[in-house]
Length: 284
Image (tube, rainbow, N blue to C red; front, side):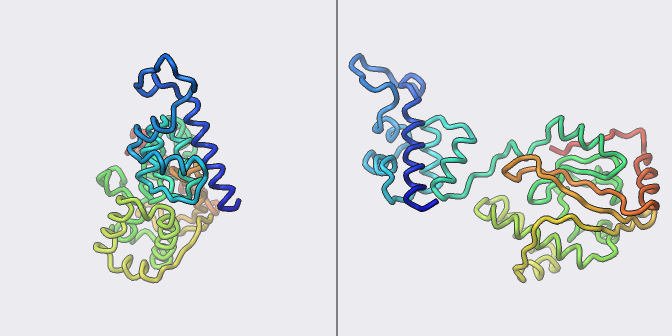
C-alpha cells in the first residue's frame, strides 16, 4: 500500500467513525437545526483538544503526521474500541499501544495448562514474564511458587538465579538464545517504558546479559531441544514448543514435550511430585 493510499484509508476511517456518533453519545446537546446525523469536525477537534484546521487536514488525507498522544486523544474522542484504535494507529504508521488485558490469564489458559500435564507448560508474555504454569513446570527448576511474582521472568531467572542456571547443560547457549529472542521482541516494544526499565535493570544486574545485549543479535521464535538437569530426576531432554494465543503477540503458551522414552517416564514422575498441590498456578 502506497503512502497516498494509506492516508486515504486513514482519512476514510476517521470520517466513518465520526459519522456513526451522535452528539448525545459524547455528552453534547443536539440543536434543533442540526443537519448532519454524526458529529461535526469541529466537535471532534474540540473533544480531542486539537486544532480544527489540522484535524480537517487529517480527514482530507493530507500529508501531515499525527503523534501517538494526538492519535490517542482522537481515539478517545471518537469512542474507538481497542481494535479500532489499533487500526487507526497502524494506518498512521505509529506503534500500536500495548494492551494490558492481553497480558492477563483467562480460564481457558489455565484449562489448557492443566490438560498439558504431565508436560511442563506455562503462559508467558513477549518479555518472558511467567503469568501462569502447571505443576510440572512449577517443579522443573526447583519450586517456582517460592519466587516472588515480580521476579518470575525466564530471562531474569536465567541470568540471575543460580538454581535456574545450574539446570542448563549449555547455559551460555541458552542465555545467548533468550537474549536474542528478547531483542527481537524489544524491537516491537522499545517505546514502552516498562520494556526500557526491564532491559536497563537486567543490564545492571547481569554482566553476561549486558555483554550479550551489546552484540545486537536477533533471533525469532523457534522450536528447539532443551537439556535440563533436574535435581531429583536427572537429565530431561525436552522439545520446546510455543503458541501465541492472540494476534498481537501478547501471551503465548510454552510447553515441553519429551524427546525420548526416558524423559517421558521422568515427566510422569515429575507430574506426581507434590500431587496434593494445585494443578495450575496463576501469577496474574
